Image (cartoon, rainbow, N blue to C red; front, side, top):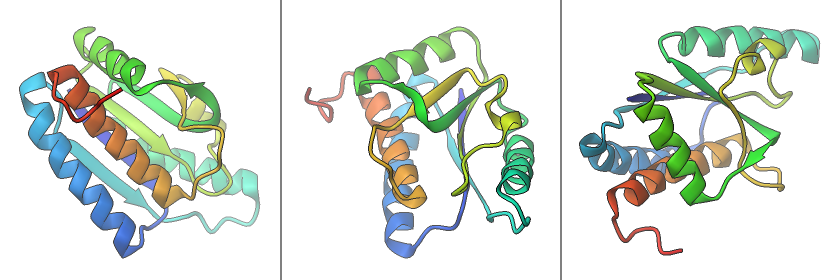
Length: 159
């Protein structure tokens, strides 16, 4: 199952290095599990005048970037918080159900437009604290790597 992380906003060098490190680890670990590769799509923030217009524009571009995915996960502070083990199980169940592609959407500073949220397989929260978008992306990609190691029985995850 291919994975896509589509995110609004540009990363700084340190965040980019962290994301690339975990992306490479995920690709190496996930291959034998039928997961990957992990593609990352970075979209610029909308320049529309109102928050509603920015969210709508960004949602349309996120959906276009992830159109090939069979299922979408929308990162949202009001979403469901999963443990790393539960997240790994959810990914495995999604893969095992025959899903060929899974997309993770990270919206801009104003959040997601309704089009991005509608029809999402999961609204996911990374926790109660607010994270900068670049750090949220790094945390998500690390958790994808962690999920692969959990599913592989690798000792990286020691909970």
